[in-house]
Image (cartoon, rainbow, N blue to C red; front, side, top):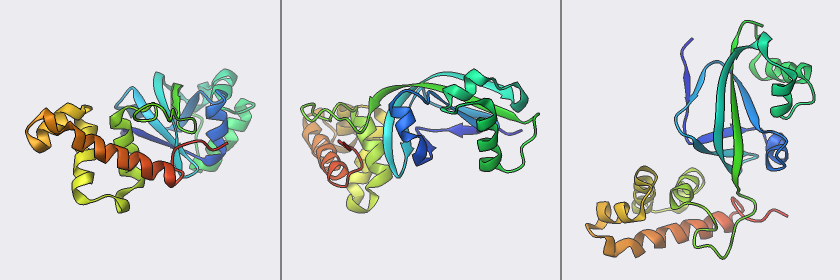
Length: 194
């Protein structure tokens, strides 16, 4: 079985968002071998980013080896309920099929942002990743290139050097980030949903 790779974004159904935010759902079980490329990722559900999480453990098992505890970590009431969900999501599954259990902890809820923090409590590279996913139409070609570079460098300084040849132009990178944040909040992608 060929592995699938998980990048910086993990998609879940909207019905699981509240369970993730309340700490009830602390894992996701996926059919096949899934290998995360990063320790920290952004979970999306219901058409928006939900939380930044740290992957704490990845396990591979056969479907028939799953436990009640793992089902509950995935937000289900029982192992049978989880198995029904997996059959519904993936169709015909065999008890010998391999599944991946990805355990995680929420680092930052994206419905509760810190308005006093320069980037609302997010890392600049996280703002860039979310903006690239939800704002492509609202950003100029140059802004997209700056945000892409920021996702690679994880550094405002390095991106300023890459684009302008000096760290003295960091303010231009920050300007793009601030614009992206304003748009993300105004479109309701991140921010207070109470």
